[in-house]
Length: 164
Image (cartoon, rainbow, N blue to C red):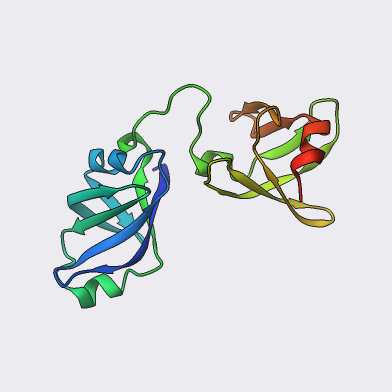
């Protein structure tokens, strides 16, 4: 089965087992479309989702009180890929970008994507032969994404302007 990480549990919310999560989808409302999730390999039915900006409050079957919710703190929430909403063209799930090789459009490999931090302009972190390197996915930096071959092509000049 193919899974995507859709949120991270931040903390318990209230005394009835609800958890506050940081949503890793474009819109916290998209979590409402997912009826089952997996945390540390265990399946949970989603009972209720209240979206609040980039966060959501989620009630899960089997998580009945604050103590049970506390055990989930810091854990990733995964969903089956087929349960996740489709993305518009040119948008990608972070899990699909992780592990991609980043290459310059005029030749040469930069490194491999080890993480993407969602932000107004997403921050990609790469593992390179010289250690970790980060860059902002600002306009004109990414020339193309080939998920089938796991390759992200970047413009060398723009990349050098936004990498740290």
